[in-house]
Image: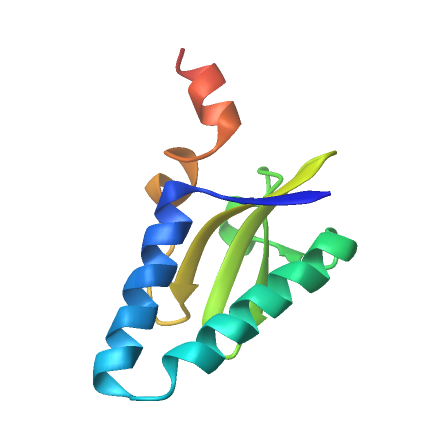
Length: 108
């Protein structure tokens, strides 16, 4: 199973790492390592994450890594990382729908 990151997830991860590099020197590297290792573990067991309580009817799941939520979509041949949010950040429908394949199909 391959791992793909949406543009949104990549941007968010990069922004968070840049913030850490400036505001907490030495923390960006370990942060990125924890996130990527967690995603690798999920790749092996894609259903281990929990369904999102506010989006129970959607197939997306999440894992918590420290103070961050990794939202992902398990598919047959890939794991799609949809977004990375700090636990204090609100997850909105737009965070999910703008990047997910079924959104593009449903809205043409």
